[in-house]
Length: 187
Image: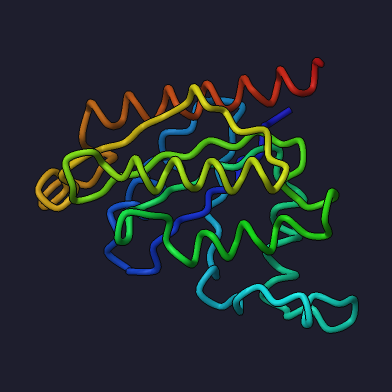
């Protein structure tokens, strides 16, 4: 049985290095793991409890929740915007945290990785994403980390899938996340 991992990218830019990193993860997924790159985070309105009412939940939020509901685990790709998590990724986590106590993240393994222009590769934003996902009920894999610094120069002419070091690290991340699902299932 294949483990279904939903990938959420915290950048909407078409040439985003985090999106490229997610695309590489899709291509490099080991046997038994299927990574689905979610499209449409930019279409989801900011979370508002007034519109999160049965019968009036925005279609884009329903689509995200359905995709998340069929996932066994989550792989979040977070750039760093002004030292913290991008709004689009935080908004997705907010929508997935509801209904309170029974959101789509509850009890499912979550890993957060990414790349950023700075020398630390976006670690602050990734830490914030882990915090938010954990509070939302996700089983955050604190030991699965990958922060790739200097994205603008490192990936200027090379897609992450063609960077041997990054490809090996991504494969390890997905393999370890896949094992977390097995551990969660066996427990």
